[in-house]
Length: 463
Image (cartoon, rainbow, N blue to C red):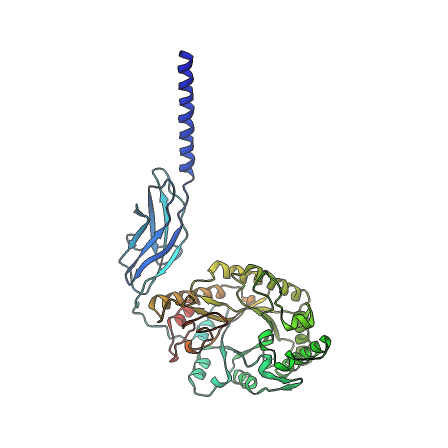
C-alpha cells in the first residue's frame, strides 16, 4: 500500500511539475498583438482595435503624432486596456496619429504590435503651404527634377498651366504626344508639330524635357501594325523610327524612355507585344542600342536612356522580370536608369514595398525616375465626394513617397514626375483600362488650379 501511495505521489509531483513548466513556457512566449485599422474616425478621435492574444490579461496602448513614438498623446503612453479596443479622444482635427499595442499578463509584457496610421477628419485650420515645389526641391541636400506630364495644347503663354509649370516644375514629359503613334504617320514620314511644341517650351523656359516613349505596344501606328514586310524589314522600320526621333531631338531632349511596359503582369514573363512577336526576345536590347547609336552619331553623348514600367512594387514576379531586363541592358552598358510609374492608391503599395523596389535599382547604380506618379483615393468607388479623410490620407501618401525618393543617394536621383496637373483631367477617373468605374481626385491641383493638401504633402516630404 505504501509503495502504491508513493507511486501516486510521484506521479502527482511530475504532473504538477510538467504543468508548471508548460505554464512558464506559455508565459515566456506571450505573442505581440496584431493591430487593426481604426473605426469610427471623427474630428477629435477614433476607436483603436487589435486582435486577442492567448494568455493576456490586458493590453497597453500607445498613441503618438509620429511613427517613431518619440512622444505620446497625453494619457496614451502604455495606457492599460482590458478590452480589444479603445476609444481615443481629445485629438486635433485633420491630423495624423499612430497607434500600437502590447499584450500583458501578470509576469510578462509582449513586444509591440504593428503600427497603425490614422488621420482624423475635419480641417486642421492650417492653410496649404504656398511654397513652389521646385524651389524647395532645389534646396534639399541632393536636388532633383520635379516633373509634370503635359499636353501641347496646355502650353499657351499666360494660361493656368503655363504659370504653374514655370513656377513649380523643372521637368516635363509628354503625356502622349511624343509616342510613336502620333509622330509616325508612315514609313519615314513624321508629324512633329505637337512634340516640337512641347520640346521648344521646355528648352525656352529652362525646363528639362524627358522623352516618353520611343517604343510602347499601345502606341503603334496602324501602318506599322499592318506592315506586310518580313520580320527583318519590320525591325528596320523600328530602327529607322528610333534613329530619326533621337536625332531630331538630339541636345534638346535630355532623356528617353526607350521601351515602355515590356514586362507582363502575370507570371513574370515578357509581354507578348508586336515587337516581341516580330523582332524576337532581344528586341529591347536592339532598341536601346539603336537609341544609343543615334545619340552618339548626333554628338549627344550625355543622353540618358531609361526603361519604364508599372506595378513592380507589389508584383514581385514582374519586378524580377524588369530587373532581368535591366541586368541584360546594363551588361551591355546601354541603360542609365529605370522609370517606376507609381500609379498608386492611398493604401498601396506600402512604404517597405516601395523602398525594396527602388533599392534594387540603387544597388545596380542606376538613376531612378518616379515617372508617372498619381495617388487614387477612390479605387473601390466607395465615396462620391472627396472626403476630408481621403484628402488627408492622400496628403500623407504623397509625403511618404517624396520622403522615400528624397532619401535616395544623390547619384541615383533623376526626377519625380506627377502624371497630370488637375484632378478633372487625370486619366484615372472612369478608366476602363484601369477598371476604375467612378470619380477620383489623384493629383496636386483641383479643377480650378488650386493647390490641394497633396501638394502640401509633397512639400513636407522634402523636409
